[in-house]
Length: 227
Length: 56
Length: 245
Image (cartoon, rainbow over all chains, first blue to last red; front, top):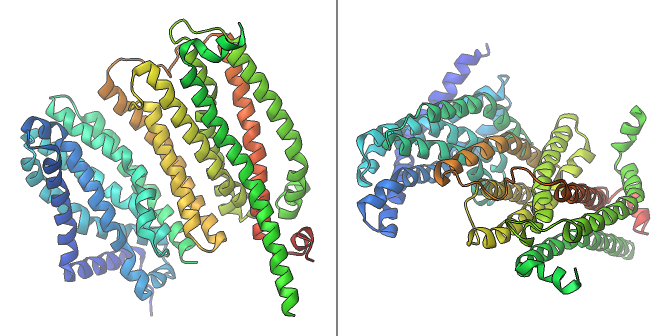
């Protein structure tokens, strides 16, 4: 029996996770519904004044995206941990960090990408102008992968714990703050007619940093949690 | 400068002394905590060993 | 020299050395603290803008410095423990966590109290205060994770990873929060950013910074000794110490 090459292993893991996700389509829907619901809660809490909603809108949608990402993180390793597949993956001859990248990519395609699709709808709910909605989608495209990658580190640290979900939020949310700041202010800046190239460069830098560093951290964290 | 002037801190007495007070409380608590921990650890070890000797 | 480091890695040797050092460090800490407080509260002149309330600086700023310094130590010690499997490094890392969190708390509270007479409110979303708040959450995360994992060796390794991830993020968070703050607050210069500070006011500040470092050393060694006892409880030398060998 020949061992598969690294690209093949990556692809196989990616395909497997996506196939499993498609079979449990309800999971995807849950994250989306949560995103929409949380966003819809804010006008109910703050009041329907369009001017206020337009000002706080980008921040609200981004916070809702953060929370939706946080809630969806448990699914990254949960089922594999419970049926022992995770340990199998860890015993593979391929570098674990690359396999982690495959898992996180699958997770983002399942939970992050749909947020992008739904964002224009939420922008409309909060009365955001077109330019802001466009910027919102760009920031979500750049930011949600970072959320998945940083979040994966947190899940890897807490996967073996009984009440890991509670601690996960505490661990991961402070690390999400830079993404939130740069994205929300990019949308606000676009709305005010200012240039957003600086914001987008910073977001891209964060993306590059997480792609290169977080799989390694996730792999180490996983090895420690499941020793 | 006499003591009451010093204590008054130019009218800001509440702010200055509350700050220093809270800092003092937290720092003293941090100092006492390992002392208490060590004592508790030692008595725990001693009582566990005593129980082990009683059983054997 | 090498044998010194080799011996230091032994918990038993560390326990002994630390025990001898603590009284000396404690005495030095007490002296510098009293000197700093005297110079800061009595000798330093009153600020013409802020009156005597600026004296809060002598606990606020050193605490903020310590909160960052300790996080660095926690992360570096954690990394050393992780990479070279040195138990003592792990112990130093986790023993630092609650001390660092305490200093962060002090910095936040004193900063907030200082803000009231200056800005009229108990809290402002000033860049420094907001960064300290996030730092507090990072510390609490480390402490929570350590308490949640049963096996303390695993716990120490997990928190080391978390601390390393945190340390990489701290400059990013600092920068982003400062940037966020200037976006929304305009050109008002925060009182914490004293552009130039008079020497007579600076000296007590530096002395307090040294005093706080000595304090950290004392409490760190005390906590580390407790942690060593807990981990080595089944060894002969600990049993002898507890009088139960």
